[in-house]
Length: 336
Image (cartoon, rainbow, N blue to C red; front, top):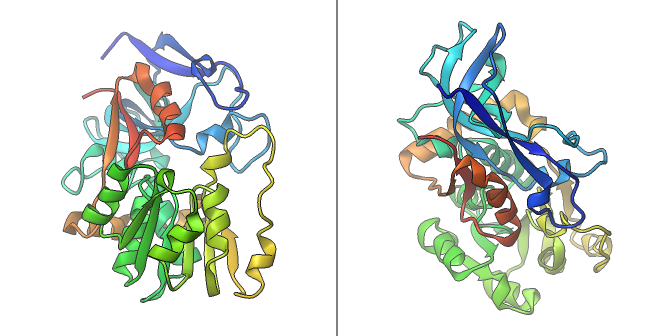
């Protein structure tokens, strides 16, 4: 075990898009677990768009970080010291920890990892919080039925890529919006999407939707917001369902942008719009984990992780989310 523990701290609140000034790397002592806790050597840590909201000094569904706090998120790694009968040293687990070489986790709040099903990074993506978000957001909120047209924004991200594949497993026609030809090719050639739009290569999202979803939209899974969402709302079919998962196009806005007024577009189709937080489904996480694990093990759901090497590069990995650097889930490799 190392004698020191590198850990990232929240240094200052950003104005607009964060930069390196929001992060500070310190060398601390390796923490000691108390009774019921585990000391975990972090193998991979997760960076996620929702973390931008925690940088604001305002109430939200996720408690804001205080300046000076250690940064926290999903981690997966090896138990190197156990003060719990639930896990032995040498076991691999995943849970919510710090951006650090070593993290102390409550044994009651972690889950075991089976590397026979998928490699470690997958437990921060398709078999972690993003996969559960896709599972419940599509099936419980989107309520897809065979033959529906499902449109997904941010489709090549950690959540969207799983949403589209679950929709295909439910007999739907699936269309994805993504930000490069590499991403759209991955969606159609490897994940089985019926069509994909590179939103950076078109000036008219409405026309693009007419080409790829000529029969309108029955389910819209929104990870992005902005003009893509404005266009989709004009194409909603009768009884359409909209699952609002994220709005990454607006996370760095300092003022609330005003776009087309969407509410009148919901009247004629009698569409339903619902926001979702995966934490609301915590009592059913086991069900999602089992089903997702089966799909991954059978090859029915594919996954991809963009790996940034080195704890020292964790802020760069996080900032890369806002420029679309990742294909699939963005993770940071901390140790082998």
